Amino acid sequence: MRTERNRTERWTLRLGGVSYEIQVAYKQMRSIRLRVLPGGELRLSAPIGIEPERLRDFIEQRAGWIAANTERMKAQRLEPQGRPAPLTEKERRDALRCLMPLVEKWYPAVEPYGVVMPHVTVRAMTTRYGTCSVGRARITLNAMLVQAPAECAEYVVLHELTHFLYPNHGRQFYAFIESHMPDWRERERRLRAGERRAQAGQQT
Ligand SMILES: [Zn+2]
Image 1 (spheres, protein in one colour):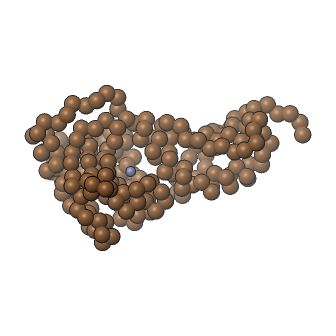
Image 2 (image 1 turned 90 degrees about the vertical axis):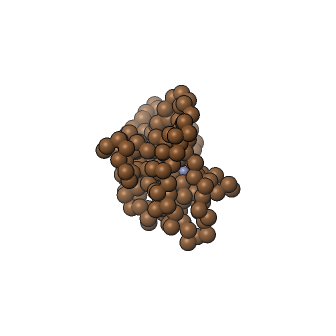
Image 3 (image 1 turned 135 degrees about the horizontal axis):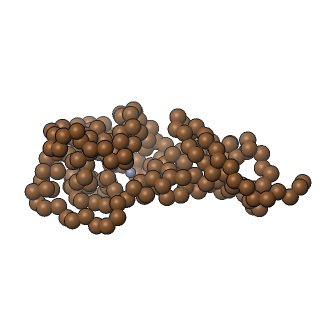
């Protein structure tokens, strides 16, 4: 076999209806390695001379892992910097009044599985749209969701409620969300794109 130098290619692959850009680097190595970089970019390193079909199989077998981890890493890059000022009591109350109806609207999706109505808190957060504490039956929503389109805030609410059923972002987690909200990807995209509610203070 002739000696080849390291080289890289760019692939675009469709996995589960989603298109992914993957940078493929051929190197002096024995195994295949797949990584997700902050921002969601995929990097595959593979031995020089390996057949493309083997790489394609390798990637396709990991479609679930790729979907979950690119979402997670995209979210990391979107973290704004700095610590937001804590909410005043009035801001917290107003935000809760705006977001609570969305929790009440989506709670019935998880209620049949024995999930108790969670305690809902609102905070100014930098790194997340929402968090879920399964043990404490609590979800915390980012106050900025008040400014997001209601459909996008609803996606976050359903996402956090779904964590009471599936703690991780596995295949079943997203299958559950998809069964209740088939257009969740679009809602999430709009949220990450920073889309705002049409009119400030608009009621949901
Ligand atoms: Zn989550």
